[in-house]
Length: 254
Image 1 (cartoon, rainbow, N blue to C red):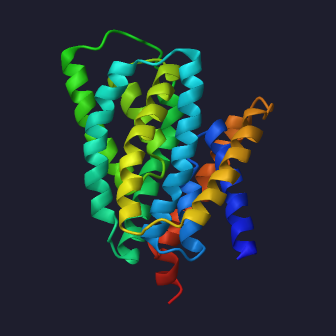
Image 2: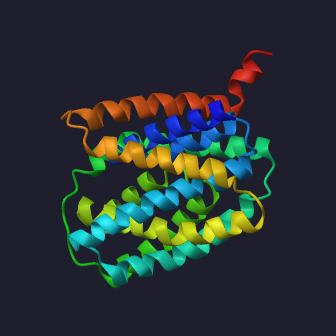
């Protein structure tokens, strides 16, 4: 048990470091929890504890900087909450084999978004949102919530892509909105997992502690090109995990 906790702490540390420098820590932690023997639904619920802690910390930081658009954030959080509640109910009792295949497919999609993200960052325009854009954005965030509630892994990249393409907001404001929206909907998602007995509290606490350490180390990471190389490592690691979860290797080795 000590070895398992130590390993989960190490995974959390790596994920926290990655989250600060590139994002996508749950793409590491969720598959890791599954590989360590947790049922998929329990791994999915347990991972949300670390997500909640990280989002709470990041939200507090952005709040101190005073760059929140509270009204817009809450407006996006409402459809995200609805989507998250539906998404969580869809996966909470899903058989492990099916969930693993769904997670694998989602990871491949998120990988494509990760690769495309540097191009999206070139969009710097920050204009006024029209009524049409607001409606489209809210509809998109229902789908974001649906994905976040069911899978969660890599949802940050999805949110950044959606807000960049639809709103044209600066990346600082996008990140502030991202962590706030995740903080709000993940509370509802955790409540559903908890009432169904799908959270390993001890594992979640250890994972969160490791993630907090990783975030601290990542924030002090001074290598100028760290983001670039961490993104490369993340893509390789997630690709390997996605292939493993898909069952392709098991099929080929038969």
